Amino acid sequence: MNFHALASLLLPVDPGGRGVVLEANDRWSFNARGVDADVVIWGRAPSASGMPRAAVTRAALAREWTMQQLRRRPPHPWHVFGLHRLPPSNLQRRYGERARAAILGGALVELIAGNPQVRVIDAAAAAAGGVGPVGGLEAGSGGSMLTGLRMRDGSETILRVGMAGGAADPSKGAEALAWLASAGISTVPRPIQSGRIGGARWMLESRLSGARVGRLSDAVLGDVARFCARLPAHATPSTAANEDLGRIAAAFPHHAALLETIRSFLRPLLRALPAVPRHGDLADRRLLAGARYLAGYRHAAGGRRRLVGRLCRAQHWL
Image (cartoon, rainbow, N blue to C red; front, side, top):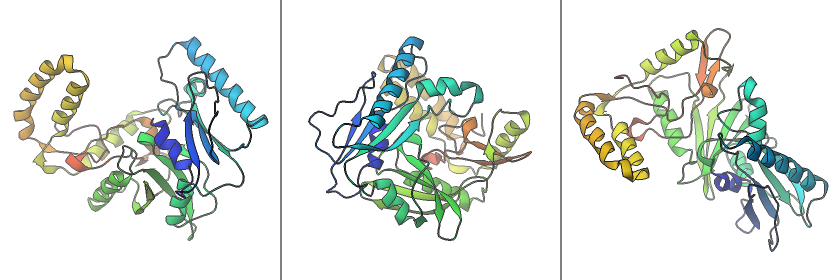
């Protein structure tokens, strides 16, 4: 999670607004010495899974103590305007992992001096045509932010906002959803409109019905397989495997020679195969189920260039 990209969406949209993002250290101490701002966004991303139990427990206790102190005795001249929990994305939905998610979780705290200012997320909601205050904020992929938005006609939608040009930019996701809609795929969100506010981009999409899948069953897995099989193929060869191996080689140069051997082996095989969409982060938390069927798929922020429609990890030829 990109904490700074996420927190910046709670800063004032007015370029003249004095706002700053302060990332807490692993002891969750609040230090605003020398900070001259009307808005302070303070906090920290969730702790990584796999850290020593004693360390994450100390961090969780420090987090709760500091947030309690900020609420009871906020430092002059600020007061707490909002507090948003950031649960680990891979743990937040499973019943048996809620305690662990609470310990590992991060937080965003909004501190303001004086009256509230229009935030980037508020301006995006207004531009999208939403009514009522923005609430129920949720961290998305790459540092994006999601919230439910009620429209003037009474319909319920999802607003996705992220800084332009980065991993959180929702414009590529909008492109992917539009492409899937044109292909007749109905079990994914429908893109409604998009735009730009300052340095951020926003996308409005339809809200899918259904509840998140609690436990994967054979029936749900069958529905996922059938969904993947319906995704349209493309006439050009698949490129994702070679590109992914290139990125891995750049990150682990001591394995570059072996990875290049694998890429050389795959190139002629891939040239004979059609490209199909994949999902860069397919997990059960992105599946929505009806009473007896799979109702829909929540997408991650991504694009469809090189057919990264980001809707299915499986490739037809595997």
